[in-house]
Image (tube, rainbow, N blue to C red; front, side, top):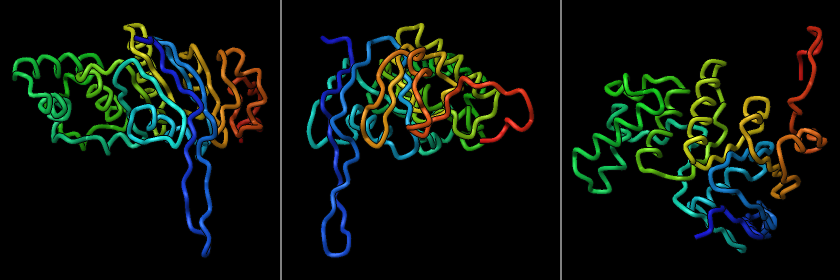
Length: 244
């Protein structure tokens, strides 16, 4: 079995009506890249570049019009709005939900649920109502659900949105831990300053096309602003610098 995610010449178009004519919108244009098993990849791109759509195709949630995708295992996606993935009333119920659909024994469900919650740091909140978790905790809960189901590939869609400094540090520590345990991580983000040091590989998607594919060190040497991305390597020396 191939120990890579292999995306070859993926194209995705949508038709829409403009007046009385049908127009074609090319969302993904001949996208190709590979991701090695056990690595962390940052897929960067501005909003609307096609990142989320591409990952939905890789996870099998969407179909492409042409091209192919090969994966070595199941893909779990943590969406930007992690709250939409919550299906249980309590933290423990939510993690156990997917396991119950696998018709496992109660003892095995409890063990997998407990192990996943310990790994993401939510075991002490097992009985909490999910609605009262913070944004960062909800993301960690969504990750716990994927870990309980033993998904080898995790896709985190804009995982830093609306998180404070402490929550970002906590999430990054978890990502680093999972990578060290052999999980394959793909982070979709335009906030490169928050995650690029985690990356073995950096890919930039712009208007549905791959415009860069290489190491993170080479990535920050590119003119990122041409793709509407802020280069994280910059110096702030006075208050006037602190504006975009």
